[in-house]
Image 1 (cartoon, rainbow, N blue to C red):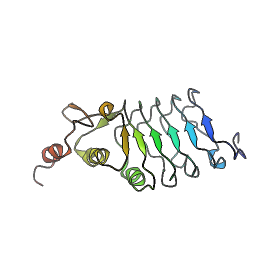
Image 2 (cartoon, rainbow, N blue to C red):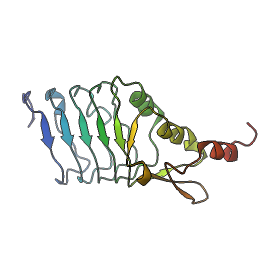
Image 3 (spheres, helix red, strand yellow):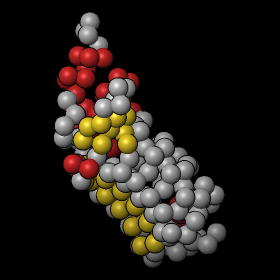
Image 4 (tube, rainbow, N blue to C red):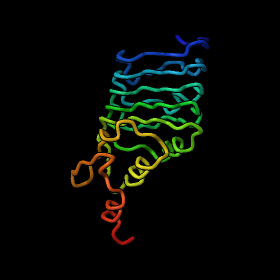
Length: 171
């Protein structure tokens, strides 16, 4: 319980520490934490409720890890303004997480550059969500996706409606 009772802790920089998937930080006790940096830690999985009680959190940096499935609960993080998921292995984000991100009182900046997102038929809703105004996408021109024909697009060049017609021609 390294962080137990550290209520004055506002910034926690743990980047480049090879933490891996054995994240057993008792962060819930640090309820005043505003910035959490877990970049370049060889993390591929995060516990769903890792950040749940960190209601003061404003910035989370998870860049340069190996996260393929992002499923952190963000519903209580109303102060979160920056979520950096760049340079991971993310292909899509689960619908419940998208809903949590869309229904926020503060607008969130989301960085997804360096992930080869999926723009296949099964992820059209995700791509449409990214192009909506629910969140600000940082580095839009560097956010890429690959379709089932191995075509690569940036977020700005991906045509959701054209892909919908291709994927669902009878609708």
